[in-house]
Image (tube, rainbow, N blue to C red):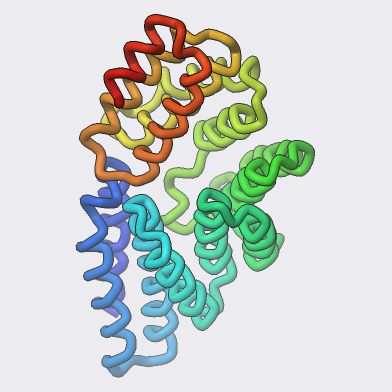
Length: 293
């Protein structure tokens, strides 16, 4: 059990590192930790209780390692890792963790051209976690359902899931103990998702104020997330027919992303620049496009 506790601390340390480092910087240590954890489970002798805790840690490690691999652009690797984690979490009989892994994989599917599968898996993840999952978990899994429907262009179910996520989070209290891996889920993160949904659904009048509010309070040391949220703001400003502001925001996105080893930020830069092409005749926009070329 001492080894399990050591592993638990290393897993959480990897999560905290992911807050400030990108996938390209963390992929090697993440995979090394995952291989080590699987080997420990397979090759050590342990009681049933310790075995379940080891499986749970393998599942938790697979979730953050899969997230890191996805951020690094290694989507096939991430898919394999997530599915390994789902298997471990199910063997540990941990529905909440299974839901987190399945929801993480659904999020990747939604963002890599497999939107219909993303909706199906996001809903399955919510169902697997069950109605008795901690409120923070239900809020997160409903957020992923909202995003999955957004990526298929289904506005009504997306907005309904966002509302349900907010309601779930209001039920969180001292009486509901959430797993450590949900430490980052709060009202601010739900606001981030809401703003992104509005941006994707081309509702800039709703998206821009939300994104500005989020960015005004966001930790500047989380460079990748700041760049990502600025990218949605740039698109929303372009949709609001504010090309000069969109160009200034896009310039910040390009600058911040240059030193971040994240395929997600690189893809968002491409999306932002493609959206600005419609305003190439605006001098500020043309300057950004020419600099990024």
